[in-house]
Length: 358
Image 1: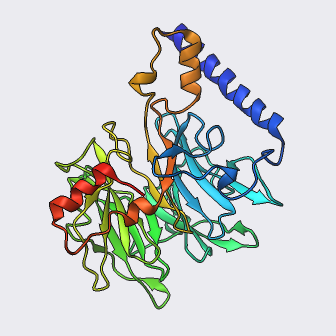
Image 2 (image 1 turned 135 degrees about the vertical axis):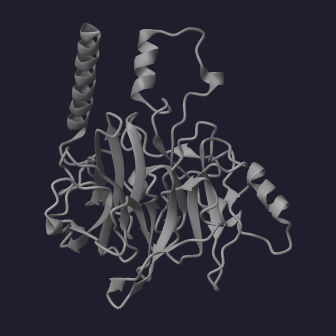
């Protein structure tokens, strides 16, 4: 067993070294040929596509997307070793070219998890999950809390813990913020097995006491990592434990009315959700045009070879879809196509996800 472990360790080092060499060869500061919005990628239509293969979606365990309001900074997360390491990377459009992804400053400590970035709609705040100790409490070890950084001359300030009443002794994570400063986030229950979506309004320079959202939003055994629209008109929630789920965890959308009532949740359908169950990181671009989501898809059976070879295994390992989570994107009109029609029965509305057309 030791020899085999050593073999795979050396193989992994060679693989990572080769990847770094390839990135270095591509240019120390930018990615040649990548110009224009969204890393110069061809926009998707109604069928989900991998986002930025080989740059963002690389074969590593990748999830979570955030962007500045002008779209010139794209943030995403990578985890290794079953979340032994986890951090946020950024690529920027500078002088018309996109830079190589690099770890965000202040988020490079391998001993803590830094994940789930959220840029406020005005671009002035960077919220994220971190397990770092809170120096204001003289903590030796941190738990899952929401932290924030302020915008400073193109960079970000040192992180500060958001504190109460948002953060507690329980785990709080996956912040998502509206234009008026309201923060939506997940809070785990004391049993550690269930979690629910909460909301804290921003008033007079502080967050008010969080409220647990109603059953339309918290509709399953557990739910987490919800994205709220900047205008608070809808929320996309990964939900576990619903009878109409296509897998372990599916993306659902719930629409909010002007009177703060919520529609019934609707499954985003088989083009977005899979039977694999690892779908739990939604995001909509600041311009509202594209829906980004994490999914752990594998090579479709119709594309399987007649036999396996070592070269094929290595190639699949190095590129999604390989079973690791990757970032996909799709035309965001899928969201509007699901908005409730007052004249349509709920069952008919739910069936619309089976045959979405844009």
